[in-house]
Length: 262
Image (tube, rainbow, N blue to C red; front, side, top):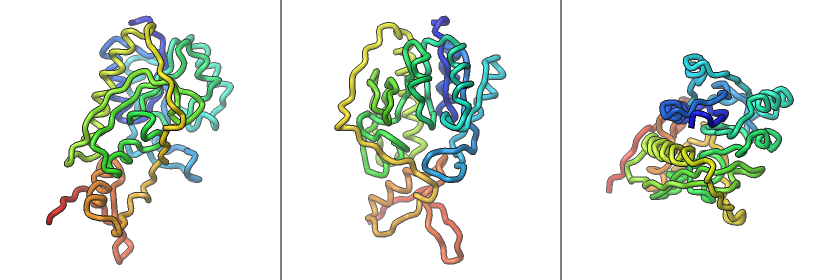
């Protein structure tokens, strides 16, 4: 598998773990693309901070892998970006822990297109913050989906899925770890047999698109019942900004952990 030419797109700790795992298994990317810690995104007029950021440039430098950093695919110089991808002569683009849509003009520059892993069992929980939303909504199971990217939001053909449980005491960090382990297993199995991959179309009518979450969305609503608040708090604990209340002196009191007592 040393001859599989792929570009790696990522900007999070999840990205870092998968990138290291791929390299250890002799899948060396032809290039790494990343996003700065403070970056532009569609739902905010100001730059947002990636609280789960990981600096992939360090790995690129250590392994002598070409590295490129962009702040928005639409906002970057798309012509230059296209030329870089085109010149890499890629079999595949892997977008793992990526925040932007990858345009068709770029996906088509790769033999197998662009593949991503979404942290849900698609078509459920497409869109933003799928693991957080699953916990907030009290789900007892979720998973990860490897899929081929298309023009819509997480609506491309499914390649593989792996499910795992959400235990009552799991917080977002626990579920994040489970998603990372499941993602490594899927990638390893599929990339070993990349020429024999099959694709399953999603039913577009069943796709559930959830919005991205902002730090301000963590404010606690005391009209919710105890189970809803418990789920809300554990869904946004470290490494996320956290569920919080605003105190009488205007401070933000972050609540990392809670328990329910009768």
